[in-house]
Structures are given as structure tokens and as C-alpha cells.
Length: 431
Ligand code: C2E
Ligand code: MG
Ligand code: MG
Image (cartoon, rainbow, N blue to C red; front, side, top):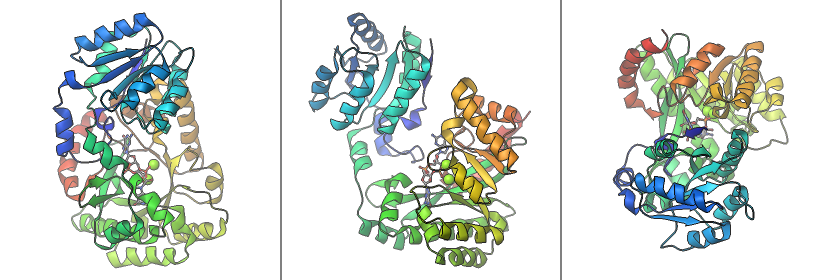
């Protein structure tokens, strides 16, 4: 019997890094008896059992369904549409994977808990599929489900309130983004990177957010794509880089030498002028090239590799540091590793969190780490979420860690207070 649950922070439609706001507080205070939950399982006995468990946990608004089509009728009804579905993935007519596809077509925005008698790997692959459809998965429950497992998955859940969901789905016009870039509405958050051996803080990654006038703090996945499609990624990256370098200089002047990493889009690398921009920005800020890390992913396929290759090689010749981001996903390939002289390899978070207890993940993690070591690149694990991840990485000899377990991305002003907190915490973690 096994159960995996995800932190509450991911169970809303907000970005994990958004600061608490009134919508979240409101979500936290909702009465459990109002929250609509739908159970979908072809076994009436399971429905009864889950129903009892949920009611014992104070969830009173619970409905059971024995088939996918019946459940979709409920999803379509605005009065009854659930905020959470407990989904049995092995059903005779419409199986769980097919049901999820329909859910997307029916515009479902609630969360899901997957339930199955199948082995853990099948549950994992269905979870991947659900996530690929941008639906929140609170956990995977293996049958027979215990009340404790269910309670654990739900303890961390805060249903998204309607206004949050609507804000999350809105798309933005290129002109609005252009104005935001020009008017300084983009702000950098910084996420610390620490040495696993000693806990020493070696750098930060700049992660851009849009402080939108009416919609609050928006995560980059809401606007980077728009910037790329409308020729705004150049101005956006310059704004992010200028602010990150200015901040690095302030820290440097305060005696804090931190490498600062900035994410690049492939589109930045199709413009030869970009190289001069980077050089100018660093020298204006008074930051040495070695202190700036440029993180690269392949968000879209480049047909002509010559210009990116030239820019990256010349940046490296000028001693800027290059990092291959999200390594192991479709966006970061072995070909890139062969052709570009990277200094750092960031192992994608999907191989990191939980690797200690998952054989497949661990194999992929080890392979990535092995590559980094053989190619003499600094290894960085992304998405370090708990103590088990931390201990696993130390045991494996990974060099640098980044993730919520250490610190979430934060405004620059929060870094100093976090540093003193970390100074207390790190001793126990490296003992
Ligand atoms: P990334 O560069 O791989 O950044 C790491 C992402 O993982 C960040 O999401 C960060 O908040 C999140 N993260 C950090 N620790 C954890 C953890 O322990 N668990 C989990 N599940 N996630 C964690 P964020 O800030 O939403 O950024 C998403 C992506 O947007 C970034 O992925 C990067 O590719 C892109 N991005 C961010 N800023 C910029 C930018 O200035 N320019 C460009 N072109 N892309 C950017
Ligand atoms: Mg990155
Ligand atoms: Mg990454």
C-alpha cells in the first residue's frame, strides 16, 4: 500500500511562488462541508468506503458515480461541478486516462486524487498524463485505501476559489505585456542555490514575475510564451538581466558574492546583438562575467543551430558561465551537451524529488549526474522538496541543490533574512 501527496502549495491554481494573498486566505478558511467531491469508481463497495472515510474527515458534500459518462454530466453542471475527483483509473468502459481527456474537454479545473489497484508505475504514468493536462494531482492512493492515506492527501489541500481559477486561465495580449516590460511591472524573484556538502549559499537563480495591476503576481509560464511569440523576449530578458546584475552588484558591495543565474530563451540566441547586450549589461553593473550564469533550455526547436552555437561559444570565451537547464526533459538534449561547452548541468526536478524511493527516477537521476561528472560540469539538482531528497543527493555526491526544501523563490529583500535563518538550519543538514 502506498500513497504520495504533494505539498499544499501546489494544490491551488496559483504559482507555488506567489505570495499569500486574500484569495488564498479565503481558500484556507472554506468550510469542508461545502466542498464538492466526486468519487468515480465502478465498485459500489469502494464508493461506500470512500464516502464514509470522507465524511469522517468532515467532507459532507460527496457524490458517487460508477461510470465516466455519468461523472461528466455532473462536471458539466455548474451547480454540482466538483472541486475534487477521486478517480479509480481501472474502470471497464471508460478508463481513468480516457476520463481525464474528457475532463479537459469539459473544462474541469478542480483537483484529482488517483486511486488504483494497479502497480505504482501505472499510477505514476497516469499521474504524469493528468499533470500534462494541467490538472492538479493531490496524490495517488493504492487500494486498499486506508483512512490515514486519504486524510494525509487532503490535509494539504486547499481548494482553489473561483476568482483564482479565472485569473489563472486568462491570457494576456502582447501589447499589454510590452507595456508591462516598459513600465517596470516585471520583477525578479531569487531562489538560492546551496552546496550539498557544506550548505554554503553559492548563488541565486533569477525567476521573473509579472506584478500585474489587477491580477496579482503572475508566474513566468503565463507570459514567457507570449513574449517569445511576439518578439518581446529580447526586451524581457534585458530587463531581467539588468535587474539581476544590479542586484548581484548590491549583494557584492555588501560582502555577499553570489553568482546570479538568468534564464534564456532560445529566441535570445538567434539574435547576434544579444551577445553585445550581455557584455554591456555586465560591465555597466560592474559584475564579472564569471558571476553571471546563463541557463539555456530548448523551448522550441531551432532549425539553424549556427547562430545560437556562435553566441554561446563566444559568451563562454568571454567567461560567462553556461548552464543547461531542465536536463533530461525533451527541452535539453544530449546533442546540446555535445555541442555546447556548458559549465553546469541542472538535473530536471522530475528526476530529483522522490528519486530515493523510485527506481526509474533514480536510474535517470544517476545517469544525468554521471554525465555531469564525466563532463566535469557542476551538477545542480532542481526541485529539492524534502529532507529525503536532500539526504539522497548528498549520498549520491551531487554538488548543488535548489528547491523549496531550501527556499522558495523570494524578492531580493527577503534574501538577507533568509540567509540568517539558513545559517541556523544548515548545521543540522550537513552534520
Ligand atoms: P526553471 O528555470 O527550471 O526554474 C525552476 C522553476 O521551478 C521555477 O518556476 C521555480 O519556482 C520552480 N521550483 C523551484 N523549486 C521547486 C521545487 O522544489 N519544486 C517544484 N515543483 N518547483 C520548484 P517558475 O519561477 O514558475 O519558472 C518556471 C520557468 O519559467 C523556469 O523554469 C524558466 O524556464 C522560465 N523562466 C523564469 N524566468 C524566466 C526569464 O526571465 N526568462 C525566460 N526566458 N524564462 C524564464
Ligand atoms: Mg532555470
Ligand atoms: Mg529548470
